[in-house]
Image 1 (cartoon, rainbow, N blue to C red):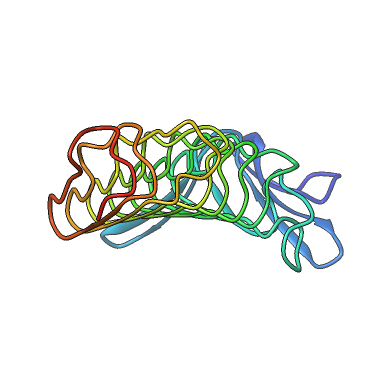
Image 2: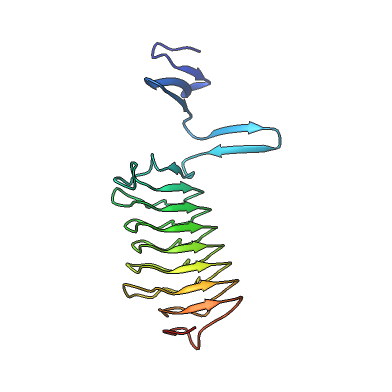
Length: 193
């Protein structure tokens, strides 16, 4: 039904289509918005996180509102107004970021514990997933690469490339791991290749 507020309502007052501003068409649902087509479906609800640098809480990013690009369930869920220039793709990727900038996380749970670290790159399932605190500059590429590492200093600067590369690291730093299952001498290894 059409209402006096120029809303086309469906079922109740919580589900409608209307023009909220000049050039802006809103599809509004009080719980879930679904786009169904054939075998596939797109469902957007309160847990969905999609931001193409324009609708997350961050401000002042690279040439836009925030510079944050977010796509995935609970991805970037903790982002607030001082967080910028993060690219987060995947289920819970970058989930805890509330002060970190310039991070890239691609894959389920990638970089999900990072709250304040800057300049990290995590590509792959659970890659760099334990890293938290104000640690900067770590690169983890591959399934579970450096997934246990959580060095507490300012610059971790380790690089791990490969399936479970750096898997035994819990607090090591300045390390390079290349290849599947490569590890350091112990969980706190430093300056190892």
